[in-house]
Length: 151
Image (cartoon, rainbow, N blue to C red; front, side, top):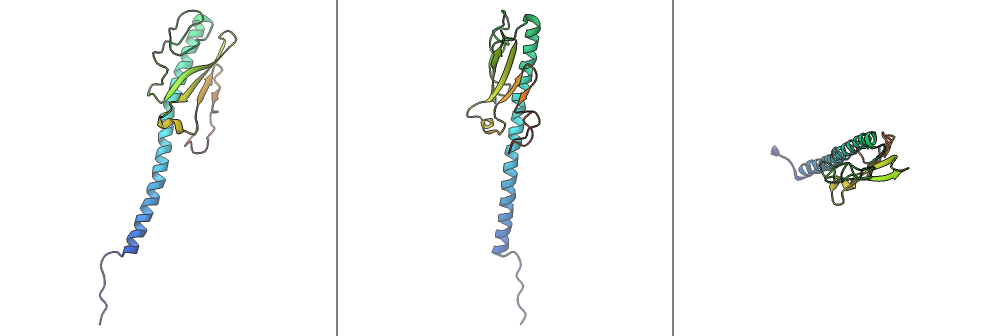
């Protein structure tokens, strides 16, 4: 007698396919999260460069940098850059003037991820730029799990 050929898949074959799909989905989800960090990081970098540009315009007019982000861009030295909020454009970072030196002749701007925001877990952490253009984490540095350089 001839053995009857079965049609379809065995349970073992089906479970192997399910495991392979699960592994691939896990890898894809992890990489997708890293791309999210990199996309939201642009919000902080953009806000820092806008603030740095405004600081330079204020320095041209007053020969001193502004001491804050929020506040009027008037007085000598100016109290602020004229922003209505210290949050970055999309709200992922808080922007502040971290350090002033020499009668407001130098500054460091800082973008700190908002607590509770998904960006708070980014490997790059706090971004800074100073009046000489030095950026930290250093431009080109790629911390582990950052999916690209921080700047």
